[in-house]
Amino acid sequence: MDRSGIYYAEEKTIFLSDRLLEKNSDFEISHELGHCIKKHEELSDYYNATDYGRRKLEFEANRIAIEILLYIWANEYDFDKEQLNAVKFMEYYNIPWTLEGYVRESMRNYA
Image (cartoon, rainbow, N blue to C red; front, side, top):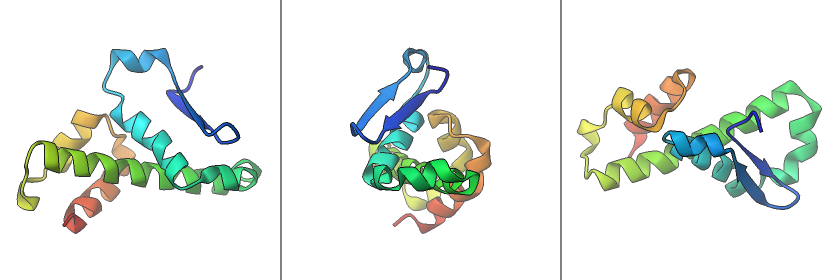
């Protein structure tokens, strides 16, 4: 598998690449959980029909992954909202820098 992970909707199964064992894979795992949580299996035709549909569902899974990890990060390390640091968070979880805007927005909205 040349992907980090994939969610097989029909079987409702997440497969992860062995290479994830070599690095912090929490983001990839949370991303695949995002597909499962949002029941993207019901939208597989939409996902496969257009690039727009695929990008939209991938971004939605990324958003859920960030929310999951932000909850863990803030509670595990007992941060106050003011202490949340987007750069440290993204580096710790290997979150792609293309998602920095959403990470910062999520941190501002974190209750």
